Image (cartoon, one colour):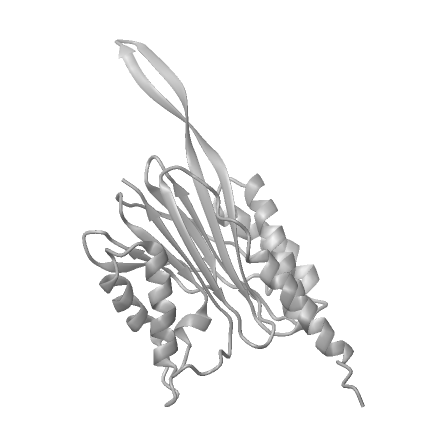
Length: 270
């Protein structure tokens, strides 16, 4: 008798193709910034996603030309938004909510001025969809980089903190507070900001990476990731991600992935 795949198996394959298609989007081509990204898929359908929002930032600046005369200028600079997220759950429902979350966040971010405003509106939009699904919540980190002024603004909803890797040495966290999306109505989020230097890097990832386990059940963990980022600060960003994947495979003794692992590495050029 010929084997006939179950309808459920075919649904999972289709969901996996949808997820992989959304994660194969081209990185935006923005002068002054380099972007590398990787997505490692687990056997089951997961809920990792990322999306990019490219736009211009407008600000009014003033300059005194002479006593009593002030000139106002509309200054513009390129702005790169990176949104990374993880849907709690697996299977077809996870893939559908992942696709919905990615699209919603991308569109809402284009209309909002800040990451926090984006997360507030996305939370309200996702609530009604998640309530009727098997999915519990979605974690998100939204990072916005003003390229010319080298300013970073961010907000998060229950997602792992982004790593700031300084060219001159040192790795720190872009910390923030914020409840996961899709769980509570009228939730608020807060923006945080800092300035960075040419050559600094920003590393966004999902928890499948730090929760990768070795045969003894020990997790790779944030400190190993932090040390790795410090060790490879002078390598090209594409090489960094390739070597990180090799390091993770060696640590886990090449065991099958239990969860998707997604990573985005950004570098500001001089």
